[in-house]
Amino acid sequence: MHAVTVSPRIPGSLRLVEDWPEPAVEEGGILVEALAVGVCGTDQDIIAGHFGEAPPGQEQLVIGHESLGRVLEDPTGTLHRGDLVAAIVRHPDPVPCLNCAVDEWDMCRNGLFTEHGIKGLPGFARERWRVQPRFAVPLGAAFARVGMLLEPTSIVAKAWEHIERVGHRARWDPRTTLITGAGPIGLLAALLATQRGLTVHVLDRNTTGPKPDLVRALGATYHTESVNEVDLQPDVLVECTGDPRVVLDSMCKVGPTGIVCLTGMSTGGRTIDFDAGALNRTLVLENTVVIGSVNSNRRHWEQAAAALARADHSWLDALITHRIPMSDFTTAYEVNDGTIKVVLDLTA
Image 1 (tube, one colour):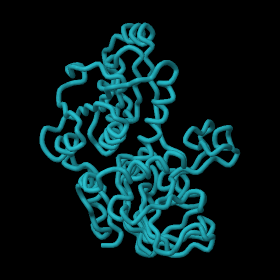
Image 2 (cartoon, one colour):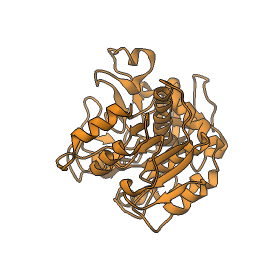
Image 3 (tube, one colour):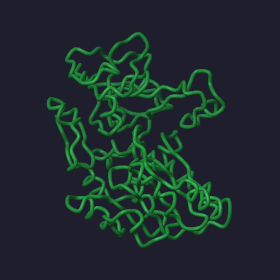
C-alpha cells in the first residue's frame, strides 16, 4: 500500500512509498481504511529533521498523527464495519510510570511513551492502519469531513480541563479569556471557550484571510495589535503561538489570580531582554498561575468528540483551508502562511 514516510532526523527525507507493508496484526485488532490525515507543525518539524523516532528495528517512520478512518473489520466487536474512527496518538510507557499506570499517559513521568507518527509507532499517513480498541475513538457520521480535527481538539480539551482544575483553588467565576494565535489550536481553544460561556478575544497577526471571520463567527473579538496593547485583563489566557515574546507578555497580561496556559512550542536560540524580576513580582503578588499543557489521554479525546458534536460543523469545515490528495503529498507538508488546517486526503 501507499504510505508517506520520513527517515527520522534526516532533513528532506519525506517520500511516498508505494509498496509499504500492510499493518501488522500486532498493532491492533481493528483494521481501518484511512480517509484523511491532518497536517500540523509537528509533522513539519519531523520532516525538517528536528526530531522523530522510527519503530524499533525500522529506519523509516510513517508520519501523520491526526487521523480519520473507516473500520474495515473488527473481530473484537468494539466497532462495526463502516464506522468512522480516530486513533489516540500516545501509548503509555511499558514500565509503567505512576501516571501511565492509570491511563494518564499524557502526563508520563519517564518519557518512555510512544506516539503514532512521532515516536516509535507508525503514523496514519498510509492507506490502512490498525488500532487497539482502547485507543480507538468512535465518531458519528457527521464527522466524515472534520473527524481529523479530533486530535488537536483533544489537546485544547485537556488544556481547559487543567485550567478549570487550577481555577477551583479559590472561588472560580471566570468571565473573559484571551487566546493568542488563530491557528487550529487557537481557534479550537476559542471554540471551547465560547462553549463555556466566556467572553472570548483572539489575537493574531493576520489581517486578511479566513481567520478574522472565523473568530467573529464564534461571537468572539479579533485583535491584531500586540498582547500589551489589548485593552483587557483576561481571567484566562491560552497561549498558542510559542513565540517567546508573546509567551512572556502573556504571563504579565492576565488579571489578579489569572491563569496562563501555554500550549505553543518555542524554538530555542533566541535571547530576549526582559525584566524577569518584575514578572516574578507580578506572578507572586497577584497569585497568577502559569501551566504548560501538551498531549491528551482518552478522557480528553472523548471530551473533544463531545465538543465537536456540539459545534457548527460548517464552521469546523471552514478551518480546513486545503484538502490535498495523497498523490500531491509534498504540497500538503509545505509551510504556507495562508493556511489554517491542511488535510491529506487518502481517498483522492
